[in-house]
Image (tube, rainbow over all chains, first blue to last red; front, side, top):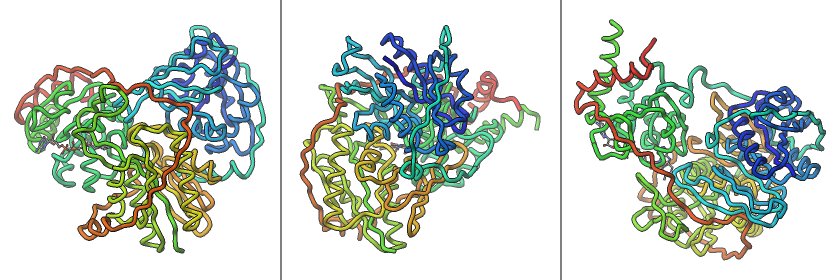
Length: 331
Length: 258
Ligand SMILES: Cc1cc2nc3c(=O)[nH]c(=O)nc-3n(C[C@H](O)[C@H](O)[C@H](O)COP(=O)(O)OP(=O)(O)OC[C@H]3O[C@@H](n4cnc5c(N)ncnc54)[C@H](O)[C@@H]3O)c2cc1C
């Protein structure tokens, strides 16, 4: 019996999510008392084998094919499907990133099997050898605002773990990590969805990596109103964010939106001004280490849930904070 | 280049500060909530309308949901959709495999009657259940390519160029037509309905397609709330004078250096 983990990577570079997936997959393999294997699509992935072993994988399947030089959902999914035929795993798991969910969905569609996205907990049936016994899972709905207890019945379980749901942690004793190369059969049908080109649009800190995010909501009142927030963000080496009310009004571009259908942030401090704190905004902000709400309404959800609050007009408070920072810096 | 475009949308509740669950745990408590279309799908619809405005053609909107989902279809017509199709459910949440099978059948029937779609758009994931798979399953069943996470679309004579947003920029894909795309909010800024659009939407023809398909292997047991983060909010002030306390805090957190 084997748990197979799909290792996400971009031309040989693995994001944190890859290690989260291996950690979660290892816990699952332990609970099943079975082997942990990993699959990487593309030769460039072979360079990750040592690190994959540190997370406990016994075998690293490296798929080699000229169509695996860059990411493509069909090429990756077809590769995984062919490996499934070979090694007959009990479960194939990934992490619920854009790529992780996309590839697992393609695998599931190919095999006409269920796929459970964004799990937080996975409880195999009592008899691990009985494929017909349902597994109990907990997954997220509403981007994390609601939990769903679900059951899945399938000979092969396909699932992703919610991104940031498990912390990446190397194994106490590393796995053998022995590399097994294989050559999937891929062709035109898989080639059509491979990345053709890339465009770099921003450099330096992005909203999702900024140490400080200063956000404005409907309370800012206009596009011009964001100038004061820009100034504060710049003084703090941070980025400006916003709520959906703001993007809907065309005051800021969508890439600044924090929330369920925007960006998830995790700064040292999130300064949320003129934002009521609707649940869809909150899920994007809740990973912030500290939250300061600036709002005229002491009952606003953002204020109630924040660590710190200033109950006053943001148009007066935000410039006052910038002025105080400049004063202390002596200028 | 006249285009025939299908957009699949889902009716979802629009909760505010909190999502409450019914006593039996089977659904979201919606007694006091309005309903909406997921932001991703609003953008899918806007894109389809813009593409047919520029090239000529037809936008068909399809939803699988309770009969009340007519509200979301009428809204779609009010912002420019031409034809509306409802696949009614009994109001329970259908699992992703079942949903995809029913949508595929409905699409095949639409194509048999009105011609093939040049482009089919889905939201990247539904706002509520977030299964991240229905579009992929439908595309696969129809034998068409699909890429998710799309925030930019250009339709050419033979192919569709699609831009997927990643942290520092974008990835570009080029799919042969006919293609399917899973799109995200940010693709465009959806318009609001005009009064004329609203009036016209009341008269738009709505086709109901009853379909009975088998359930898939995933079953909802119960919904529940995550443990709430309780926080004793520390009040730093109620006037601009609070700036001193705020900057003290920033200093303490170590984000003031530079
Ligand atoms: C499926 C779905 C997905 C969604 N995804 C997102 C998402 O990703 N991100 C997101 O943000 N929203 C999202 N929303 C929308 C969300 O439900 C709210 O509508 C939105 O977040 C509200 O934005 P807001 O807080 O700026 O506006 P409001 O709710 O109108 O709040 C404005 C706040 O500003 C305060 N205020 C007003 N004037 C001042 C002043 N002068 N000084 C200080 N405070 C002031 C008010 O007290 C109030 O608290 C989504 C909704 C749905 C249904």
